Image (cartoon, rainbow, N blue to C red; front, side, top):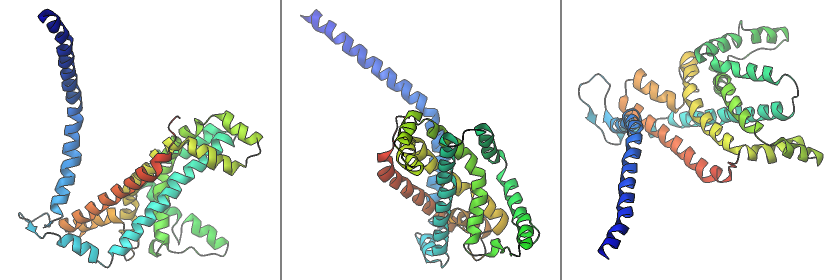
Amino acid sequence: MHAVLTAGRAPYRLGLRRSWRERVVSYGLLAPATVLFAIFMFYPLLYTLYLSFFDWNMTRPTKEFVGLENYISVFTDPAFGKIMGNTGLYILLLLVFDFAAPYVFSFILSFVVKKGKNFYKSAIFLPSVISLVVGTMIFVWILNPISGPVATVAKALGLTVPIWSNTQGLVIVVLSIMTSWKIFGYNFIVVMAGVSSVPMEVVEAARLDNIPTWRIFLNIVVPMSSSTGIYVLILSIVTGMQQIFTPINMVTKGGPDNASTNLIYAVYDQAFGFFKTGTASAYAILMMLLFGFLLFLEFKFVEKSVYYEN
């Protein structure tokens, strides 16, 4: 009997030993990525949160603890409402230019255009390999209200071009176009891959039933490529808000009268313009909370309807 019990325990002990070894190997493989995340992601985030409770100008050797004063100063700043409104408008425009528009172009090239697809793909993707700094300079020259090509054509037609960099509302639209020109090509290629994976038989069957093209796009192509679309949706917000900093810093410096300032530029301006590290850190934490809230809404309301088979 003892021999039988011993023989029965042997496979169990062997399984425990193997399971323990697999855990050690798994944790060992995860350790390098975890360490890198801790150094370059978690530590900066925690340190930013720490700095948001202090008054420090990056030159003094000591920091003065002020509690929630930095957050109070941010919320009571007269420009805070405008900055938040600008941030929301930037996000909306970037979604239109870098999420909705690539979907439409991808559908047209996949199911409507018959010839020259490779040329159009290359032409659309080309701006994504050009520096955003160069692209911004090109747009500034093209849209120069005095001597730019657009102004020259407008004068020939008897029209005038407004000074967009000093016009409330219009400046955000133009800056968003500059950024989208850079991001659009990559998003288009990614969306194109998802849209092209939709079975052609389904689209042809809908056409045989005389389904309008716009309904094929909205009711068939978009749902069946939504797994790719959700990735591009998140990418458009995160990448767009990061990239928009370059044209703001080069052209408007957040002006006129904070008309083009968003949360990300406010972080930079407070830290390196006014040397208010605590206020800049508070703005950074608010930006992180905004991104977290947007991701929460995405996972709660959008992720449920995503189609993953393709």
